[in-house]
Amino acid sequence: MSQEKYNGNSASLPTSTSTLIFPAASLNLSKSLSAISRSSHSVINRLASIDCDSVFVQKVAHHYKLPLVANERCGTWYIPPELRAGSAYFKSTDGHQGQWRFSSRRLNLQVLDIVGKNGGCILVDSTRRGKSMPDALSKTVPVWCAVMNRLLFKPEHQDLRLYTPEDVVSLSEHAQIEARLDRFLDEAKRLQLDLSALRRKISKPLRPVWITPDTFLPDLSTQPFHHPIICLTASRLPSNPDDPSNAYIQGAADDSEFWFRGLAPAHFWEHRKTLLLAAEDELSHLIQSLLDAPQTTPTYQLSPVVLIKPTESIYIAPIDSLSTWPAGDWDAIVICAPSLPLDESEEIAKTRTDQPRPKILHLHCPKGGKLGSRALRSHLHRVSPFIESILLDRSPQHPPQAEPPQPKILFACLTGTDLAAGAALVALCLCIDEDGKLSKNNTNNMAGGNEHTTGGIINKVSVRRRLAWITQSKSDANPSRETLKAVNSCLIGR
Image (tube, rainbow, N blue to C red; front, side, top):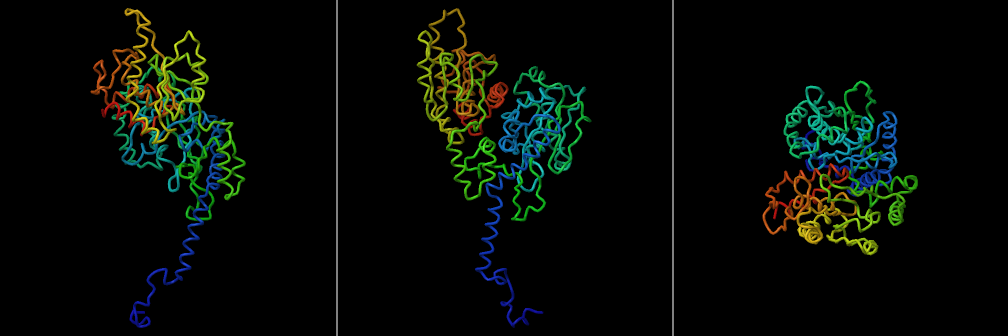
């Protein structure tokens, strides 16, 4: 039928859904679909989905008898704390198309310790709707394995090839990544890592193996010449992802900062049954009450006081560790926190009268995140003069011809992994020589120039080398991008 014959007027033809459905009904339908979508992605559905996926994770761990390693931050949600052997920091952004890289900031050397002790490990992560596995597992980890293998083993005796999942990474993308491996290897070599120490950790090359809820469990006995790194994607692809009534959420723990309302994985696992049985309208109040209550499980893993080798003087720790060490054990303490710990003055007061009390440098920073890192930037210039003052105070105590013992300087923040690592990195770059020694000849009052007094240029390569000292000594050290920007601004941008 021609438009002219349809009531004699083409304007009477249907032109949109609003002409087929009353406007009010159309608006109500849209609101209803949006409400259903929000309901299906509710916090209670997310927690239930995480709990469901965790069952699969534990099944795989039981099958292979290998330790579970959480790829932070997402992977931590899927592993009960008592089963988590450690954490790693493989970022999906390092595996994005055309952006492949080997991260000198996230060396993940702690994974080698776990692999060496257990013969392999299971690295747990997940991803949101639309992908079978995260780029961190399909590309970032394979690049890391290939670089580590080439760094530690001779190619004529070992299989050092790049392995990627064929059903996820195309032949073209695989070839492009492989073409960059020599450059990645050169970048790793410039870090001047202690390769002898790393070789003592593992006896065979690393090989990634990929498992998802939709794949079978491969027989690892067919690969006796490798340490398996099982890249385990916790979440399955839903059969009908567009069905708004589907309560299961793929990758429910991904980007948890947008939905978790302050809840941490430790809270979830400690109060798992209570949270899963709660009604949606009760959940906000319940979560708040859990956050306000004293925790029997810490919301973050406290690390011990760690000496940053090869120095004999720089230590990093979480603030809570201060109470376990007598204040007299330190010559100086640098605290990156909103305020000094309440018992700090009491601890210092307990110092024996025959011991010098430690000097305190308080770098006033919010608890963490970007605000903490940005605040740290405004204080980092105080680190080098503070350390120089420690050396000046100690000089009269020792004859000129005698080399005084290295002072013990502790850097502390809430977690001992971010702000304290950033402040310690400044000290390592400005006050420590290549042998790890601290002396007045190495300190720099930061009055100008970007050189050590010994003549060494401070640039991004030298900063990465010192950062490698930290990550190799303290496996959980993970200064954020903002913290490293603050460090670079202090060291290079001045």
